[in-house]
Image 1 (tube, rainbow, N blue to C red):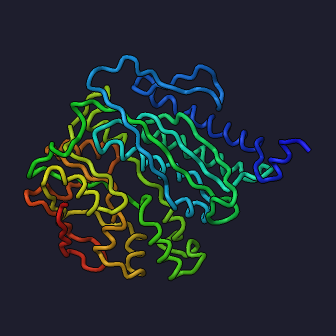
Image 2: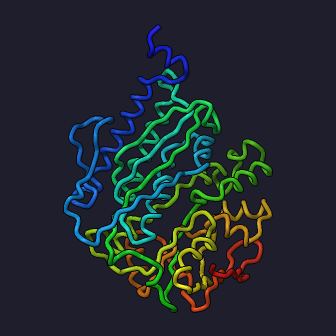
Image 3: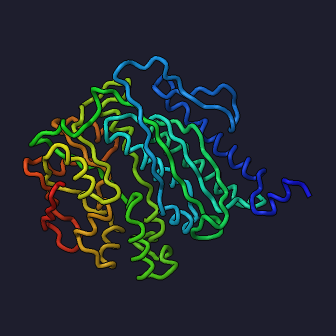
Length: 377
């Protein structure tokens, strides 16, 4: 028996893995055009999924900075596995890393991912899933205006679990570049600045342990099949994260491109919700914020809060509650006009205040209109 056959019998078929790697590589090459003529233009000395892919940085001017961020889609991948749709999860992966990059005034440029799977087996049965993941790869990278420079495939067997026979976990790293005069440190904000909320239609990638617990306890193990709002809980839960970074870069200015209206602060509303992310934004400035005109949470979010008997305070700490990103600006009219032109739903949600506290006028189902107050620490 050959070494190849022995490895295949152990559950890892290197030929199938190579085919998946080829699928992901061919998808990634479609994203290289996003960076043509910009910082991060991809150079490929030879065309192969195992080949070298790099960018030239030899002529960067003084005051240029580079950083890298890491994140994952978390357990939201289980929702894709439940409903059998895999071409939107890339939006969740890239939203987490690319939208984090713009919080400090940087421009996301390159993304690399690691797809850890339970295994592709010894035949072609899971290749359609790989093609769906690759399809989402391209669409999400286009939305973020980044190039996908590589994608690692790992077959982990029973060490990766999920829902159904094919389980996976997907994480990414994002390289971003910034200019010293455009970095956001927290000191740029001033009392009276407007805070603009960008609308989010789903849960994004945070608070899923609570979501799954509530739905499972109320509707049972097959909760994702429950009809709701003309759809199912599973399909609505899978709503892909909106990617805002391309819009933010256009607005604030990129590494080489001029912006429309410089921002004074950006908060990406993920884990910890508005209380945590706004506190991080405001901490160094010793200022506060009053948010009295927030978006309503998506119907599935409100439904989950209601049937789970979750307080408004806990809901705002677990979920985004309708806001995917918050922008601080002294030119709200410019920001709102640009958002409208780009199809981004945005509204003035409040303002920066002198007192170091966060005041949220709740849009939750427990006590709508009630002020939730917390100190900035």
